[in-house]
Length: 406
Image (cartoon, rainbow, N blue to C red; front, side, top):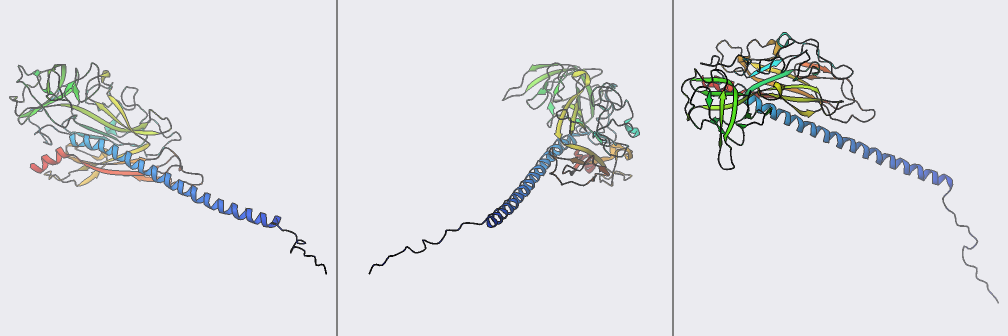
């Protein structure tokens, strides 16, 4: 008997995925991809915002470090620092009487709201910053004037943003005399690598001496501010030794402050530093915090403009004032500049800056429309940026040290 064996299943068809099953699988895959993409984009956006905020914090620290250095030097006049009345203090008529005070401020009079372009020429300011006011300690309105077409700080200061002025030495350590002066107009201080050297012709640098720069000569019997007529490097400083600079002072020089000695006399180059917010020189779409330094020399008194931090949209400053009748050295109230009746009584400054990153928020994301900056509510021109306010309080050490010792 013949038996034929048929392979099992040869009569059955092989089946694959149906069209419906394929569509369901593709749909589920797309949903999974969309979910993962959403998580990725969200994580990327969060990482970017964290990075930007970290950058803003770093920039704010840098700005406050600059202001902190200048505030620590403000009003420093040797052992005369902080005194309400300084014996034998004098300065040439071409200088504004501001080095003794050390700090000065100007408060925006209009509400700090931005125009469509973010910046407008301030049409009104408080009385203490009238048109033509010179605050560079040079005594010439060609240096830094507001609401006029002069050089120095431009008219387009950010509307509603305050101005802070700090005056004091530009080096941290005093320069000593290397020889007794032959006359009140002759001065031979040391020249060190960190300051006190001779500037190149026309240089606006404030850490050195040149014709027209300002110098403070002080001892415990008096202090004299003067303008340098000529400066000559007699001996250049080296890596192992200080040099010396021969200065000829304008006017009466150091007449009237007593005998100058090698042990007690201190010499400083001094400067006026002005902080303000204005359109960036590097990016027309942003605003920046500027530091403008005037030492009385170089560039026809135009000073040295330094753009510190981009993305600073506003600055508000409050001043800690000792209002006690007998001046006890304690801050009793914080006031805006226009309310300060005596700058000699200002012991601290509280600075708030409004900052934003360079890149806007993502689609469909917006920030608040306004924020409190210092004592003012600032309205933003748009809500596409993640803005932050940073605040610091800086103590004016020279004022405090004198009050504590008196």
